[in-house]
Length: 310
Length: 310
Image (cartoon, rainbow over the protein chains, first blue to last red):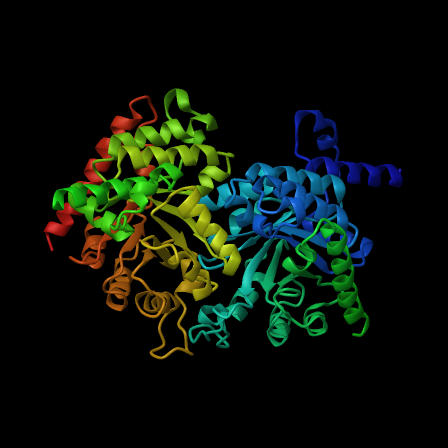
């Protein structure tokens, strides 16, 4: 009986991720809930023994071999990367801007479907950094979770809780708030101290507190923290001990893997360490998928080893 | 000779806005530059005697008459509103989320073309509130300015100057930074005081200072300030005396038109007062375009009268 229930749960989870068409009504009427973003994250972390997230930032001008310069090949390029790394990652993270600039929304939809088929247990974070409120934020949530079927999304907290809440209404979906980013301009606002808030936190600490506490109504929130500042990941961890952290900046953007894992990873608080260009463009030739796999294995293993050393 | 030059300038401006296809090379090779976003803003303000911006936030469930619920009619609905108000506005502001949620990017492209034809002197602000950096921000800039041909875009400043600079490389285009928004959650970050910056400004004042000063390399920046806080528009004006202000929140969201104009408008610093739902959904019947026009005339005239009273 337990086996049947578990099976139903998995089947339903996959069906739900594939979209709720009428023919799936039987599955939808069953009692069990689909896996949440956090469930999926735990599964993929275990199954693939990985904290590595492959960021899908397709730039046709950097495409290898015969794909080079062809924006109609965005799907083909990304799908090949997905196939080559599906058993190595905790998550995939397509960056929507690279699709939007090339009128490639259709290719992104196909890629999302492909990821769900090729890696059904690997959650997909749509990197969109949306930041709007009310009815408009609801539209963006529909775009991310219904149109594209993403399991989580990245958001900007600049407009406050109103710009986060509409996403939380989508049960089980995740939302990562920009907190401390690793670009030079990250200091312009995020690294300034608030006089008017108790304890005088820096802006990014204030965001982390809100996300760990009052904003996190159903445990759906996470934070984006750049890998180039391990000391700041450490400060975020102190304020937000249980939130999953999405950490871009390993690989092409630098960042010390060992220091990152040491500062961010906790047994019950996963980190998702994202690398894009170093993996996508590991080779400029037709062996690009193989080269991407080699690079992904290397990065995953460095991260896992750093965790072992804790 | 002057006449010919002026004509060439106008022709080139319109051709450039329609996209730089190969057949336009002759025009492109002429000396004159296309009108900048600010040029267009001054022209439309004068020509239409207006500070009113119609926000295009199409919600099929709210569509009137026989369009109701039909997401394939987004273009038709918006084009009818544009035709009914083209001679009344300083700007149009399509909100991209409403298109993205309905797979309506193609309809948005057609709408942008229609606005350029129907109202060639009215600048279009693509309300996207993008907030990313480096290569990703470049992709979003391509989306806004090249794919959609927008004259300006809205941006989130949370990631700092790196998230603004890529847009400034598009000569003559405008960029409005979120500064002080009128939603309740606007207080969560924007209304907190910075201890670490000279003069201890609030976050939104700090953004206004950066946009008026060091970030405004080529005079392309403006600010988004909510209409529901005239006292805060006043503070922004003190810090940013010459920037154009995009002020949503008049109409359906409340906001006192006279206080808004008094606080924000200056002879050399335009304000763009945006109203969406009150105009779009002024009637739930087939006379919706006529009703939108009536509402737009009313709002425009209230704003102009407030200016006259200064």
